[in-house]
Image (tube, rainbow, N blue to C red; front, side):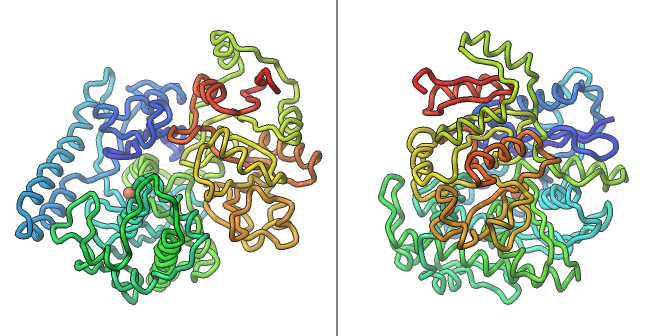
Length: 570
Ligand SMILES: [Fe+2]
């Protein structure tokens, strides 16, 4: 008997399979097989069909093997919340309230259609469970953490009602401790600022985080006033800064623009004001999160913290929680965002409902599909590309990177979560100062203020970085040791920090051997590691995606399984 988890009606659709022992068997985000970023259940026509198929195929299962389905949302609860909130605002603009009511009913229809659509699958006869969204987030972190007992902080844009929740996990049980409801939401506010600064909301929040390092938090006092930061850390929005009917997509009032200035257009140059605004909203989030953590620590007495929800992708916040909060250990799973709720929902059914014991802690994000050398070779031959077989692919790739080439690295099981962690990565030499601009110019086509990350051998991380000992899922930042900073210019941000990934030999031996081989050549035990995609596309999933990205970009070489492809000009 297996348990299927599903998530992401409107954004970040995903599927996950957990076995009867409570172990994660496979997890895939819908965006990877559909090749559309943040593809949702709705985008795919009512179910995350492609990730579902990929999960069943990877696990070698059919529909009749699925005994239970955990779904990431309780739709009726949301309808009550939205109707109540919108009705309170309706006297300001009844047509806006009517629009949102119709929208919510449409969402409700989408949620209710999922079990009906599943029942149309041949051989399907599973029990369906609607589960609380924040509880699914909490489960996605706690059940795969190494902790028997921990406090859990969930922060996202919105769920059925809550936007910030405190939980306490003990063994197989997770209990709600406290909640703060929408619209007083950090995820929502950060997305609004992302849009206001000229980036795409629910997608480009990490750009605001990257931009923050360039600015000073000169707007912190104004933002603190706007969010009316409470003594226990939660925001309580001052409505005078927002549209009276709380109408999207901007949601702001004239007072907001008078205070913070006009919004930035998407193609407008980034100015010092934009940098300062980014630094201010980032600082306000960190201050709020640290205060929330104190409150959570006081309520639970725990010294261990799990973080989940989309705000958990904010690695600056995570690092401050680790270094400055009362918690001595912090765990953030590789998929803390909404897609992660597919895993959380399946694990909730396994542990809370079926009382199965917990499986092992998650050490790897390599939980997606894998392609054998025979499958890869068949694709290469079908595409009529020239390639060679390598008996020592790690050594050959280390040679290429050390010579200044940029290499696509497609190996093993695809990553779960938005970070490339050495399974679907683009790799380059971190010691060359020009590499950051080269990777940006010929492959990533992205803003020059965004940093690249280092993947460093776990045992050597503290030789190069301060404060952080491990960061296997690239969700913490660390300061480079001053004496080492000059050696790794292309992976350090303007403030001397890096969003590092620590690579453990036992977890990803092939990637570890590659970095070790590179260290033998250049004396530095790390490589520049960025996701294997071009801007605007999801990370590559299958060999054909890797070939498309290789030939449609300035990549110099591609290491796919044990096969090596090189451009004719290099
Ligand atoms: Fe969420």
